[in-house]
Image (tube, rainbow, N blue to C red):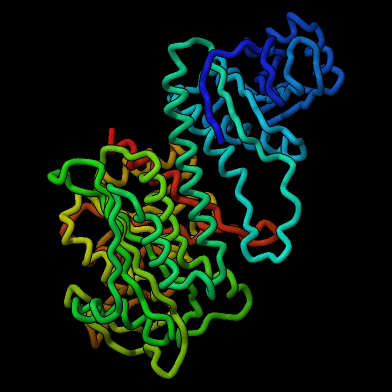
Length: 495
């Protein structure tokens, strides 16, 4: 995809589709007004078709007067100063309106669009991200790939009202395109079935990402090395599987060695049966998505490689299957984590925290500026927040506020949950330092409390993405979240 930002004349544009904006109350953008002034047709056509300029409303016109473009798409933004979410939603509606067209070149006239709290760079970033994510299709496992979708654009031009905006637009387009590439990698890894996307497959994917990259290095720890490090919690999860666990470490060095890195830790349970505490059969196929946290970390590393920002980032992915067998960990077993703390495994289906706690201890060696773990950790988080927001826990207010702000800016939102000492007692065990579950009440909170016991040496945040990493039903598929949130946070840190 070729992305360009420049000053555009709507009357002389020759793209396959020129996109102009309109607002409620018969208010037009400068480009739409230019079409009306020259062709004298746009207002009449909008009135005839009942187009009111409401947020997300679209009207596609073929060979209209006033321009040399083959088509014009009038995109409603509602209020004259639309909200960020209204703008993002409208961009999605524009793609939906064009999905059955053969358009290869698009021109979107942003003119002097004003969105409170958002700059030109952000506006263009959302355009490229939306368009890039809209091109994702999972066809790898289909014998018949089908016909190529008619809408597969190869060129996008963002029109600026003045030349001084083009540099910011171009930067935003580059960032959005890179985020889309990373987000789509996350979706691809999530949508792959568990018999393909194994811990070893993720290790191979990490090596692929690092191949030929001067700023990205990869290291894979096998089970023997993890055992030598004392990672008894992580290895207790892989004990029932024929697939060996992997600890995947990717280091992106974009800044001076003296700059402390941000460490991203991803839960990589490539398939979760629940182990001996076997899950119900209905919907178990979706447990291929239990590596959604790991997939999002991969997506961030892909984006970093594309953008090369001035920041150091380390990714640590704890990859394993959770399977039942004669060698599997049993409820009541006691394991020793890398930190030396002992854990009574009361439920083998609470395995994510077991792989994460050793990965979080391993993260100490990087002397991190901050650590953010990402995990499809608890069904309780879905009950609390649904699919709209990821659950956020943190031991530092400053880190939590930065991540929440990144979520608001990206539209990939999170909601902060409590991490109070009163919840810790639910993890008490008569036989070990702690149990791996805290009972039915506040399940997402007690899971975070468990992880907090391994993160006392650095600023830490936990994102529970069980409700946001994938969709169920007829639109089943990975969403790519929370890559946009994490990348907005990392880019802010880099700047």
